[in-house]
Length: 281
Image (cartoon, rainbow, N blue to C red):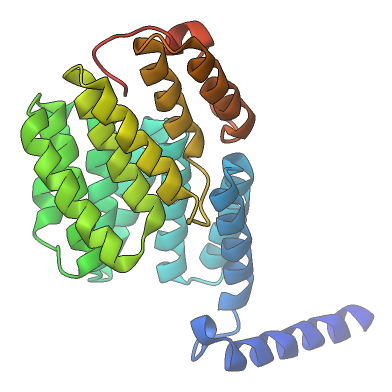
């Protein structure tokens, strides 16, 4: 009896929340459990607690599957893929992006399908397979529509060019993406474009310009609520300092990166950071 009363009260609370909270307005109360887990997961993701984020997204996914809410199912698969992508677990990320891409297409949600295709393309770039990346790029390019999609697609195009050793051409796409993200005040995405541009200047041996761009990335990132990838930028700052024979700077940035690295990451040793090879990533 008591359990039944608890369930009744919970259902009533869900109904009240769905009638007041804008993201859930007009939705069935059964969306609530998945939404709560998703909100919790994003908080973990933004802080760089990626393993916690995956666990929460998976709970949300289970709730969405239980109550047959396909929009949430696809969304949480995408978000789990984003976590794996930031953990450099690209095979797991690809599995998630491929699954949600199929589901978005079945729901005729081409905007979401475009985003999942974009991240699948980025995964293949990171794995060193530009041909597979281009296949996803070509598919997703058909669905590019809004400004968010356009900015992401410029970023993907730039990464694909960079993967094929067309660094100078890639710079144009990254700069255009930066301008679009700036209008949207998408600070984390702005910082990521600076990070990519710094990698290209580093490749060509222009450490001064690379260092300026990394300084910009850190400054812009200070405005963002998302800190999950700040450690990467700090690692690049350390590497550039090493290449400029700035050992105190290298050690300072490296220690900062070490302390704020995302949970679950395989962190590079300082000896690796101090190597001045051709590529940053």
